[in-house]
Image (tube, rainbow, N blue to C red; front, side, top):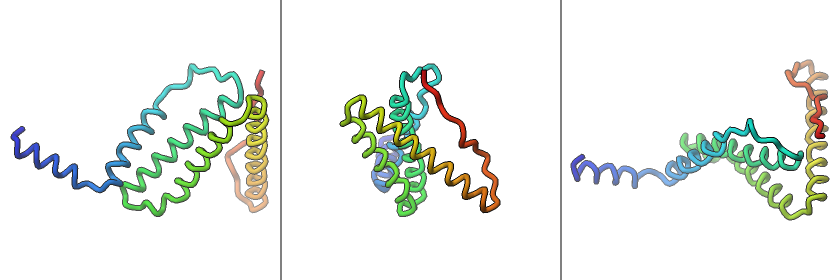
Length: 142
């Protein structure tokens, strides 16, 4: 490649908006984290599973945010950014608890999520909508 053509390519990269450059960096990071195969990982507790799930959820949301950034629709990403912040706060809060308090907190979060899901399913059913989701299933840990 000639020197002038390489220089022109470098100039074009520098002229790209920061939101695009940053979005591409975040997308590569999210793809790397979400691409990790966890099929052979055996979680020893609900707490471990919830922490990994929260981390993966944050990276999944970051992919949505990058797509909206690339489409110049960052204002539409506000709910996704709020969710990532909420996940980060939950993880930070859980990290500061003792192991026993963390287990209780995770159990409480799961119970609340289950309750909210079952209420939503009941509401949808009452409104005449079908939901392809079984809210009665429960994970048992041995």
